Every structure is written in C-alpha cells, then in structure tokens.
Image (cartoon, rainbow over all chains, first blue to last red):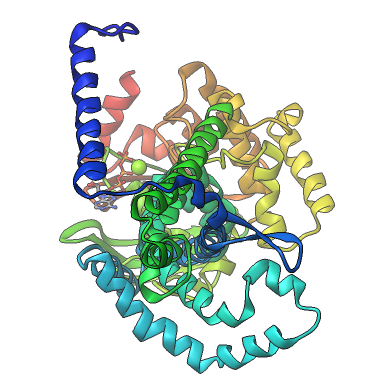
Length: 290
Length: 248
Ligand SMILES: Nc1ncnc2c1ncn2[C@@H]1O[C@H](COP(=O)(O)OP(=O)(O)OP(=O)(O)O)[C@@H](O)[C@H]1O
Ligand SMILES: [Mg+2]
C-alpha cells in the first residue's frame, strides 16, 4: 500500500495556483467586462426579513423555499420508501407478470431524461390525482379555517397544498424506482435458505417478507438508502419546473426580480451543499458508530 | 409397525429443473411413525425428493399426498400442511436476527397464533429436549455448529408437527459435533415421530431406520429394511455405493 502523503509537494502548489488563477480570472472578467455589482449585503434580507408593521422577523423568499424543499424531500422520501419497498418486493416476486411490470417501470425511468419523466408524471398522474380527489377545494377550505396551525406546520400555506402534493408525488414516483432497486438488492442479499426456513415453519409469503427477509435486508438497505435521501434532496430542485415553490424556484424568482444572479445562486448552492454534505457526514458517522 | 397408514405417498412423481429431470417416476410411501433414511450419491435427487414433501419444490407430474392432503403447485392448503411438517436443513438456516428463543417461538406465535408466554414455555421445553436450555437468550452466531443444528431441530419440534424432514443435518458440521446432533435425532426417533432423513451416517441409519432407500440419477433403486439393505441389497449400484461409504 502506498502511504498517503500529508505534506504538499511543489506540484500540488502548482495545481492549487492554477485553480486560484482561474477563479481570479473569472472574477476579474465579471467585474471588469460585465460591470457586475456585487450586492452581498442584500442577501440576508432575502433569508430573514424584519416586518415593520407586525414588528417581527419572518422567513423571506430563500428561507421559504428552503423550508418547502425540506418538507417536500421528507414527504417524498417517505412515499418513495413505501413505493420502493413494494417495487423491490415486486421485482423479487415469483409471479412473472408482477416482475415484468416492476421491471418495465424501472427501465422507463432509467431510459427517459428526468425532466421528461417529471413532466409526464406531473400531467398524467399528479394533476389527475389532485383533480380526482378534489384536493384543491379541500385545501382551500382548510386554509380558511381558524385553527389550522397543525396543517400549516406540516404543509405550509394551505393554498399551495395542491402544488406541494404534486411535488411530493412526482418526486416520490421518480425516486421510487431507485429505492426499489436498493430494496431488491437488499432482499436478494438474504440467503435463500432463510426464506425456505420461514416457509417450512408455515409462514405465508407476507409473513416471510415481514418477519424474516426484510429485517435482514435492512442492514444492506440502510447505507445506500441514506445516500438516496441526499440524492433526492438534490433532485428536488427539478420540481421547480412544475412550479413547486421550493428553493430553486424561489431563487429563480429572486434573480429575475433583483438581478442578483451570482449572489442568489451562490447562496442557494451553499444551502444545498450544507444540508447534503452535513447529512452525508452524519450518515457516515452513524454507520461508523454501529 | 402396528400403524400402517401411509402419511406420505408419492405416486409416479416426476420433477424437472428446466430440461433436466431430477426425479423420475418416484413411487414410495411412508407410514405414520415410520423412520425412513434416504441415501445415494451427490446429485441423485435426495434433496429434491424431500423438499417436494413440504412444497419447497413443486413436482411436475404424478401425485403426492401428505397427511391426506394433495401437494401441488399453488395449493391453498400448503401453508396449513407445512405446519404439520418440520424441516431441518444442512445449513441450519436459523434466523440470525433473532435470539434462539425467538427463533423457536416466531413460528408458533405468528403462524399458529399461540400467546407469547405459552410459546416460550414450549420453546424452553424443546430446548431442554435438545440439551441446550441455557442458550435461549443467545443469537445463533454465538453458538457452535452442533448447537445451531440442535436449535434448528428444536425449532421444527416447536411446530408440534407430525412429520420431521432432515436434509443431511450433519454434513455441514465439524466431525466432533456430529454425534451430539445424531444423539438428539436418535432420541427423537424413539418418540415414534414420522421421520424422513437424508444422511450418509450409516451408523445412525442402522440404529433408527425402519426403511432404507437408495437413490441414483433421480430414481429410487432400492427400498429395504436395514438388515437386508446393509447385508444383501438387490442392486449392484447400491452395493457399490455402500462399499464406498462404509470403507471410511
Ligand atoms: N434449483 C435447481 N435448478 C436446477 N437444477 C437443480 C436445482 N436443484 C437441484 N438441481 C439438480 O437436480 C439434481 C438433484 O439435486 P439434489 O439437490 O436433489 O441432489 P442431492 O441428491 O440432494 O445431492 P447432494 O447429496 O449433493 O445434496 C442435481 O443434478 C442438481 O444439479
Ligand atoms: Mg442434497
């Protein structure tokens, strides 16, 4: 094994120098040629803002977007987990038709660009579900209610509830295929003899899955699932295209009204980075402590 | 044997894996309380035969009846039937995420809906029977191979089934552990349980078997009581096989 060097070689300095030079060049280009005015001092106001009338701080555009991103990600993960487990089990089913349906769904998602998939899910499924279940009028009713704090806490502004729901559905459907593959790999990592032993004590297929296979598959499933959760947070920016007002959408809105292109996008990038990298560190630590 | 009702009955059973025929025209029956030992060279279809009995494999032709119920692919009765059939595997197949006690009780609790406390009393009784009552709270990985296999035997006893199937229960064990498992099996044989056992432990076979069966290439070649089987088998294939394994 080669020893990992802790000290920097002169070549490393050369590489670092090149990187710094490149960024300096970009920066000079921007301020010189584009005549760009940096207005970093305005950014905090778009995160938190003081409301003079009500005399209180409130979350402005970027933080609003971030909150919705977190909400959508959490709900979509839960839904994707449920769908993914069903899909994973279907992929291992003894029934050929069920196996083929699950496979088709996976291949569909693998071989069509995410953007196209998102629009298809949105127009063909999410919209239809929302209409069929009459979610729109129902959520407006709740929005008008007096004691709707609990709803507001979990779902935000109830008038935007339909958009939240379609965001969650679309994102969850999109991720479920990959969750399903993780679950399938987990299930298939469990020794065949386990299922045989379960059946030989008289368990049904469901009991076999529930008490014997899944608990053992969990160990294999957890680490990649944690990664998938992080991926999902990143992927959630894509649902800005179906007008879910999450972080990316709000940033675009901010940019178009204030023209603080670089500040806004860099701030948003930092938000995503901190959350995703933080979670990644956390998961690595949790895994190590087991 | 006073009781001569067949509890397991194969009638012209064939089994295919794709194009490969693993069982060829198997006709044999096992009476209630009978102890049958099956032997034969590797790949002769012994496991396949025994796994058909509780529907882990499905035969493709012929008729198989167990405890008066016909076994076939997709049968609704198979889950009920499996509660009457205990199975012990070569690789033990204990549930590694459960303690020994939970391994024994999960079947009775989830399948037969017996209250937990009652199931645990029963489980401890059977752990006593296989001589490891003190290991109840451990996990399978903490036990030796011989102990694990005895737990597996106790697990199949916990279903209080009528029939016990053994598929080479000692061949994954270190030699010094084989006897502790065989001893337990001999004790079980003395209780009058119906047993079908695939094994090459001929000492054990001589001691407990009512009927010896020799299989080769998917066919049953020889069926005989042990006295005749070991001293004067009809077929040459069987004699050759016995000479080979009894040498060691
Ligand atoms: N799932 C399967 N798919 C395809 N072929 C199989 C399968 N299981 C068994 N076979 C084949 O069927 C034949 C009989 O297998 P079986 O396991 O019943 O033999 P066995 O007598 O138990 O052998 P051993 O002493 O090695 O356990 C073998 O040739 C084997 O290769
Ligand atoms: Mg075998």
